[in-house]
Image (cartoon, rainbow, N blue to C red; front, top):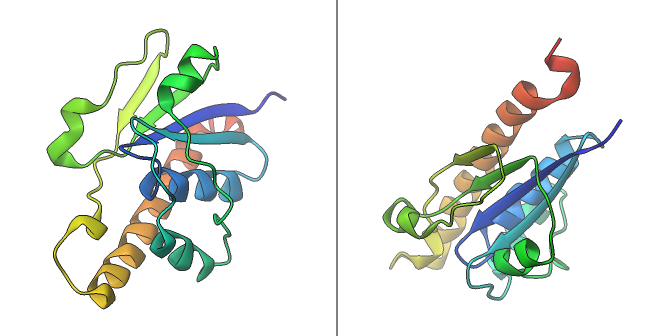
Length: 147
């Protein structure tokens, strides 16, 4: 059976979309092929690496990708899910030819003016909320659940 290809997109592919990619590839147990990208790829956030390592997922080698590079390379996806800040959601691009597009608005707590400890706690909460969304997505999308 062919894997369901999913593109997860956020602003800079440094935090939310790499976390979502790791969760979907891990929890999808081979039924999904998740990739992530950003509008303006940046450096992977070390705090994201740390909170994902707490749950046994290593994203430390995640390469920041441009959504536009994937698009111009002709990569096709069954689903595109944007994880943009609610304040910048209007920047999320439109993906022609993709029938299934969803926006899961998640804010980036590392951009808040709070202590490092508060950022880490908010990142743990974000990590867990993304996992919950991924679990629901898998439940609704996995081929054996469509019967």
